[in-house]
Image 1 (cartoon, rainbow, N blue to C red):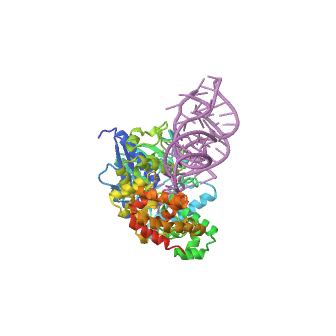
Image 2 (image 1 turned 90 degrees about the vertical axis):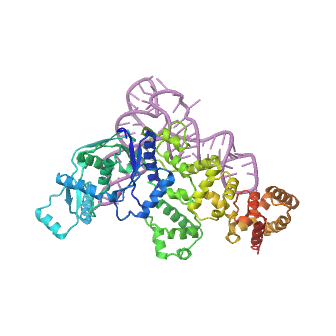
Image 3 (image 1 turned 45 degrees about the horizontal axis):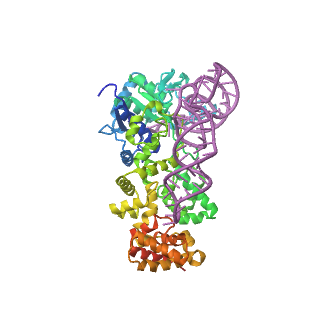
Length: 544
RNA sequence: GGCCCCAUCGUCUAGAGGCCUAGGACACGCCCCUUUCACGGGCGCGACGCGGGUUCGAAUCCCGCUGGGGUCACCA
């Protein structure tokens, strides 16, 4: 290991599936390491006992693996397993008079902040002068305490690579921040500084929300005699709908908005809605009225089903959401790289290895991008259009691993056929929605009432009439191929004087349940004659 | 509100004083293809936030304003 080797890291706190913003941070760190032949490390910041769970770690790691951002430390670093290290250093800091115990309760601190806010002054914590009596009483009461760092009052300054300039904090904004919480865990500030030094991290690429934290970190580094890493703060990805930071809550907002629309347009009452969703009325009402309330993961699907919102209609926020909707990691990564970085010129779509080659810190962009999913979808379309069929099948398999669909029953050859007849598709969820009827059992075929009305019942059951005749025509067809079906249907159009649309659409609805499907002849061949006739019969049964 | 950051088409961006009548991609509009939804092909619309400087010359440099974002935890 040479001393000039670049070492980066991604240090998420495990709160569940990985957020796209986190994925981008991980990607940039990974790209920098790979570009320079350095190392990229993964550390789990699980110091928040209330939120960190094994399940959350598992999901996080699963997403990172799926993305293909492999880390170079064979053993994952967990902060929760390093308490002895932090405590030793904190003891030393206390012994040197650079840290001390503080006894204010959260409520007391809250009061101090409120008072400061009232007089329009910023609240900055400075070491209180506890009297010996007070101290004795605190200990007597067994009052919990935190450890605070004595932040030397002076100007702090560091160079930020993405900003390309020094960022400065004046002396009067210094304060004694907490480095060990009452529960004995280190705070983020302390853990980050100690671990980055321990892991020999040379470059810290992280979100812009950490910009001002950096002053705390360099103060600590100075006290501990650590060398300062190079800092590069990354822009914040924004929700295009409201211009604010992308947040998990955005999905819930979409559901609420749609629910309100439906209730207004269809005059659906709250009670009616509640009973259809099988939810408590009051619960539903507070959620509808309060933007800060969120539905639970069990409640969401119930509401979505009743208002006719699909998973793919929700804005993807977590990496897992993108996977569920059928994006591939290479597409997501490519797009994410372009949110806050540009290789220059007109280059956009490129494979990972090309991104690795092109990556450099001085081409990182400092303004905040709005996350534009339409363009991502376009990247996906192009990717699938030029991907070898085996790659497409692999993507479909991956999609099916995290989704329920009749398509799971397809053989590899059938998957190839399905993908081929869907040529031009954008994401896998589209293939699924359009083609699942191909593998569905007859009982699983559900007829969309609007489609039935429009293509079959309209004009005095004209569609049903055509369908009945086609049923006999199909029955007597000498062979069941796309070509024979095509000539049969064309012949039928001519003899009956009907346009192709008046004939093909009823068949489409009869076999698929909806007006949307892959090309009809190929679909019929795929299903086979027997199943086609069965479905036609089932559909004909709808005629009243 | 204090502090900090940012500012080119609706969106992501190219652009490092003359190559700019500002380029590309997505979106959008029109046309073509078409049995549905898509895909595809063609054409088009569309931006340097405002005001001052500096300079022979500014999207590019400086200042102010405005706008947007971030942050003010015993959460990371």
